[in-house]
Amino acid sequence: MKDDRLYVDHILECIRDVAEFTREGKGAFFSDKKTQQAVLRTLQMLAESTQRLSRSLKLNHLVS
Image 1 (tube, rainbow, N blue to C red):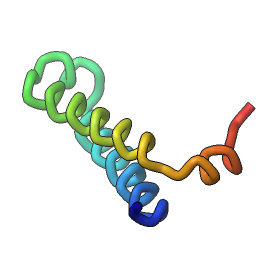
Image 2 (image 1 turned 120 degrees about the vertical axis):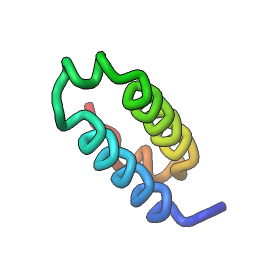
Image 3 (image 1 turned 135 degrees about the horizontal axis):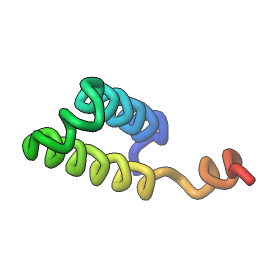
Image 4 (image 1 turned 180 degrees about the vertical axis):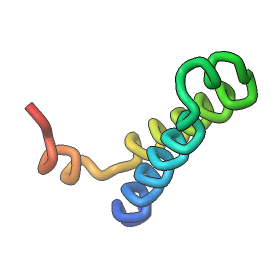
């Protein structure tokens, strides 16, 4: 199992990428299929990384 820090770093990188891809606003996003696909794939990778985080990390950082 990889270190949680690697996954957290990847999650943060994905968040930064989505912010960068969508910085031109909603109209630009919806008019550009390539950007939509890039955001979708980045969100998929982000979700995969969250699934690989250790159970203890998830339990220690549970938000209620």
